[in-house]
Image 1 (spheres, rainbow, N blue to C red):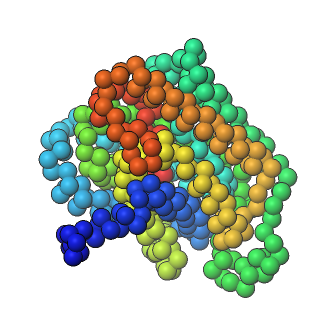
Image 2 (cartoon, rainbow, N blue to C red):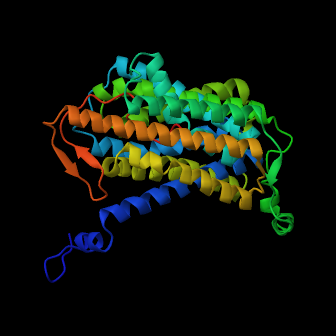
Length: 389
């Protein structure tokens, strides 16, 4: 590595200018902007007429070819030998985490809006906790404040999702006339539009299905990752099987050969963004942030994504905001923070219960443990991969 005259490497100089805490916050802000752009770009792609089957095929193909070389070379030592049992598990996980998840997401997004698709995703940690309780993987401890907080957060998230689904309410914000005139003057912006004339309630049901698939994927992947800890390879296999599954669906649902052609630069950009930025670059950034800051730190930034999506969608898509959606989003975000607070308190309790553990403080103050703690199934509050989005 290059050194300066005093023997200080360039990397150390950069670290001196930007402490790890600053790097983490900047990375998380960039990550939320990247995910927010994915919501808006996906909606724009649907409005431009890209098939809901073709779009995820191209997206997962790009992600697969992007992740494959990194998985092959970086995980040679830690990747267990593949066998038929692993392949079956990867295939089944792909059904839940890739195919069902992405299909429900696109169907829901097509009938609602990017803002509320992002807002309802904040309920995933609470749904994951609820699934873990139902499957008896995690116990509800109502005798402790962390258990009460997680249950209350789950109730808030369910209430928020119900409000968004059942009560659209009056329009409380519409883009300014100036923005409408700009859109009318621009054929590209005019082609984007909003979800007028679509079934809002049906779209919310699809988005709930998306969150249920996402949460089920988080629950089901945990025991497999213990036996197959190579995350890049783990994700690559699922991308591969996801492509095969969508191709099978296409054989029955998308027989028009013209639907597979990318005709405009805007369509090419949307596919490239979804496959490379949202499924490749964002994956690497999120893995680094979770490693350095922990899953709770990463999940705390999730509502920022909803805010950024709202701003982007209002400008680029002319999205209108409805009272029911705003109330539901506030309830879901409140529930998210209650679940995260409960999760953080649970972690503190477990550390106190095992005083022999070695802790190392990161630059931003979050404890990092080097001993073994039996963590709950809801530990990955955000997925370790963006393939399921």
